[in-house]
Amino acid sequence: MPEYTTVAQKADIPVGEGRAIEVAGLKLAIFNADGEFFAFEDRCSHADLPICAGRVTGSLLICPWHHAAFDLRTGCAVDGPANGPIKRFNVRLHGDAILVER
Image (tube, rainbow, N blue to C red; front, side, top):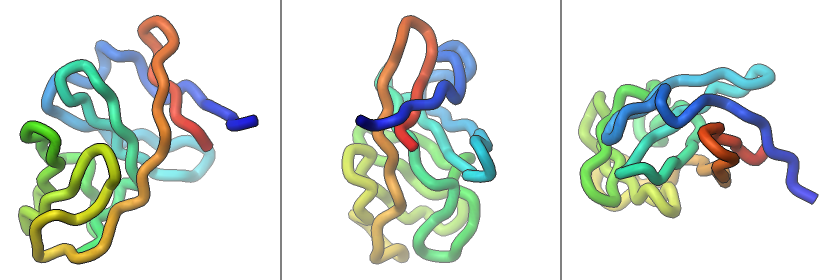
């Protein structure tokens, strides 16, 4: 059975933004896309830089460093310079809590 850990509250992450969160030594980037939350390893696949300051545009996450675009649902790169995916984690909500599968 999957194990989920509470990482934040919905109010902690405004719509269109992301936050860096560390859980048990794992650095995550949590994003709010119109009230739907997504979690990734906080590392762009292009240059190995943090992606938590990226911006959400529709169904895409845009890296703040070199503007690579990733699909929020899959983590797959959809526009360069990145050509590989970013690691995605399953998210679920429990009331106002954001939980991430570990």
